[in-house]
Amino acid sequence: MFVDETTIEVTAGRGGDGVTSFHREKYKPRGGPDGGDGGRGGDVVLVADPGVGTLVEYHFHPHQRAGRGGHGQGSNRKGADGDGRTLPVPVGTLVRDTDGQLLADLDRPGARFLAAKGGRGGRGNAALSGPGRRVAGFHEKGEPGRQRRLTLELRSLADAGLVGFPNAGKSSIVARASAARPKVADYPFTTLEPVLGVVRAGDHDFVLADVPGLIPGAAAGKGLGHRFLRHVTRSAVLVHVLDLHPLEPGRDPEADLAALEAELAAYDPELADRPAMVVANKADLPEGRARLPEAEAAAKRRGLPFFAVSAATGEGIRELLYALGAEVAQARAARPAVAAAPPATIAADPEVPISVTREGPGFRVLGDRPERWVAMTDLDNPQAVAYLQRRLRRAGVDDLLARAGAAPGDEVLVGQAAFEFTPDPLAEARAPGRRRGRMG
Image (cartoon, rainbow, N blue to C red; front, side, top):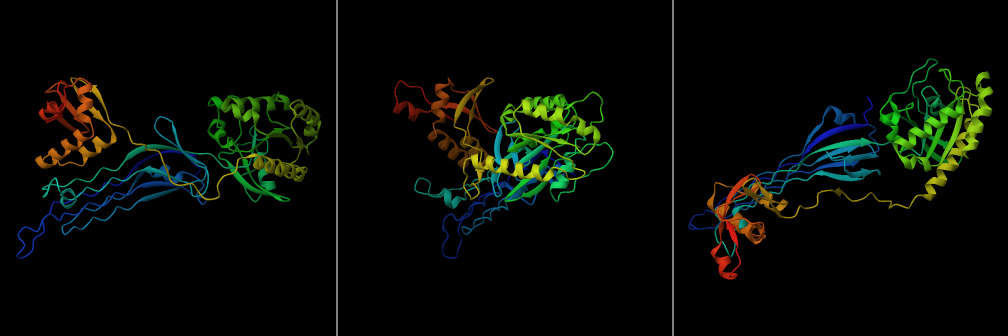
């Protein structure tokens, strides 16, 4: 089953909780805090793998989850890190978010995308104790792992793409030129999935793709062609395959070529400037030979190289492949050089800065750090809540609330927690005449 687009839900592992523990040993009644930190949650990473050719695995298993981190233990023992989840995808996979924004293009073997980052492990009371707090009677909870919905879209990495109407003989050309064995028969049908074949022509090796048949209106969603036009976008050279003996009455080479060019330009205007050539198939048939001058004239008017071939007998295939190999080599030489080593892991999650916005009668504090701090706080522990409030105040949240117009008693929402904004007498003393506050 060929699947070239699917949606997946990825969930990174939650961080392990820290622990509140105190060292206890005979003759040492006050051994001090020794609670260990929780382990980090596992990441979910997409990796471009040349051995994978389709997205069918994620079509049937759209929910992918990494392992959570282990909890900390006494005697300063850290919890184990959660197992990461590596998802192999075909080379040429595009990763988009729910808004359709492109997050990553895994166009080289080994390219990696950090789809969901694992949560941080919570600190134990040993790490939270220090000069300002000699004995911490609380710990942090593990941070939840990132969860997101992604769309994976495969675009085949082919050097040359065969485009044409159904039954033009594109699959037969690929079968004649390479070891690929797409379904071909002497009755009318259309290919239902792209077929790739590796071709060697003299000193040139290249990948030839048979893109399923296009029809007028394909770019707007008509027929099957609109599903596969995306596979043409990576082809360095386009090969327009004309049917010299079409089954439908009223068709001619000029109209067919114009329709193909219009559909490609409608789908992606850049395809109009892509190197191209015209191939007229079924030249072995008497009806086909009669239309050869018309097809050649249509190619000449556009300044495109023209080849007459017969996929059934092999006539003209050798000349076509050698010319196509040279064209592909020229297109490769014109590409900018890329590093031989695979790129580093792509991460598309820049930190969201702290901000304050009105929400109903109160205010909401936004930003990665405040929301993470709240998620990792035991809100039933007074010491933990007091520590959270000091962190928020040091991060400037009180100042932002004051500038936004927060008054004493206003409700302040941070993540899933709600606080009451109250004046801070110490802040008033430090800055007379300036209204400041804190969350109590």
